[in-house]
Image (spheres, rainbow, N blue to C red):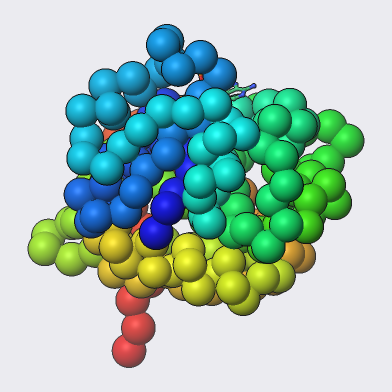
Length: 203
Ligand SMILES: NC(=O)c1ccc[n+]([C@@H]2O[C@H](COP(=O)([O-])OP(=O)(O)OC[C@H]3O[C@@H](n4cnc5c(N)ncnc54)[C@H](OP(=O)(O)O)[C@@H]3O)[C@@H](O)[C@H]2O)c1
């Protein structure tokens, strides 16, 4: 797939690296192509840096992994995203993209893209390496677009996750952000460390 990564820091960098190894074409969408967090990602295979507008134009899938408050500015720069798949990996934990509750809700109102919330519920280290004891941990996704969910689920498997569990439709997007907050609570606030992850078990 041709994937635009907007937000090339911890999360965007981990997924850009992981997906480039799987042969995807990575179009980093940045504010300044000469100076941005994650510039070393250009050493990865199949990886180029562009303006946000150009990265989007060259991609069918767009990952948003920026602070949530940047979304209005990003929407203005992306250009026409009608029918493109947008994966929202942000968490409005500290700041909301006012007046919207989440980036997903803002994208749903302001664009005609196929949107899914995914790659938000665990730490970036787990997105670079989701393998624990020889098994892939679980990723989760929520939203109304089946097309976007299909792409996100494939990209989760490509990244090494064991499954990408459907968390529900757009009414579950905020709950999925709460799952991220639960990981942050355990890993950081309760001090269990970032090398931990969620996996659903069944019997
Ligand atoms: N850290 C985690 O483990 C984790 C896990 C799951 C979800 N998340 C969520 O993922 C998002 C990113 O977190 P992160 O830790 O990856 O952040 P980060 O390392 O600080 O990276 C932020 C990125 O966003 C870019 N950016 C900031 N404002 C922008 C704007 N107005 N337009 C375009 N790009 C902009 C920055 O670009 P410049 O280089 O130009 O500044 C940078 O590449 C957040 O919403 C966070 O809640 C984080």
